[in-house]
Length: 362
Picture (tube, rainbow, N blue to C red):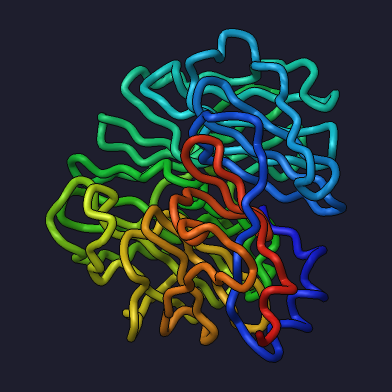
């Protein structure tokens, strides 16, 4: 979920330079962080290992530790979606019942577990919540089914499923391999558009499914389009994140998380809503686990070995490095997992915030 309340200042600075820098913040935790959601109005939420959930109400000056949801001390919260300073939904990733959904309505003082993965061999990868009472969850299954679960007050049920290749699954790296668009801009015939990334040891896939307003399938099966990519031959290589700046223009990034310094052709851009993809001309400089749209065709992608920026809708990427003039630590550009601009999170409690003032010439 991306909000852009901070963009006016970003746009002003980006007119002269696109050289983002991260201000490192004090999270108060050493837990690995993989989930981040900027609500806007200086409110943001983060999540990670060992049942960790954090919240800020002042733009990141102070990050508050939330109460751990019941029985979640050893859960890995890979995805979080927030709505304001009080309400949020958090998803854990793990085999079978280690994949759970919890919600809070009182500023994370208390939590309620609202769903558990009923597939004993499955694994939840990404969550997209539209309200405090509804969410879509992308999950893997050893039974060669790619499923998107729908959670509401009525409970949990599969809303979409399709046959997958042997060993196919998605990566729960940054809660950004699933997108659900309720009202596509391109054609009002569709009730919603569903996009997700997955892959096998040798192939990566991007699936686009659209359900018509007249459809009554429960769950829906099949897809309007499925694109395959040959990225290499490794279980740790694939698409780890994608984002769209509208219903048409999108970008994906990835790589091999076991070889973060390698630069395989694991990035692409689309100009037709994900139906087809083109290879980038200059790829990011290594494995990237998250990508986000900033403004004016500017995209930012992060990973363990650095940060890259594109100013032409993902066709070319260039590395960004810490600037001594802003007294940034040498590793300010690296060791990142997930993005929700202007915030970025990483291992051992790392949280950074994009400083738009640093975009001006210096």
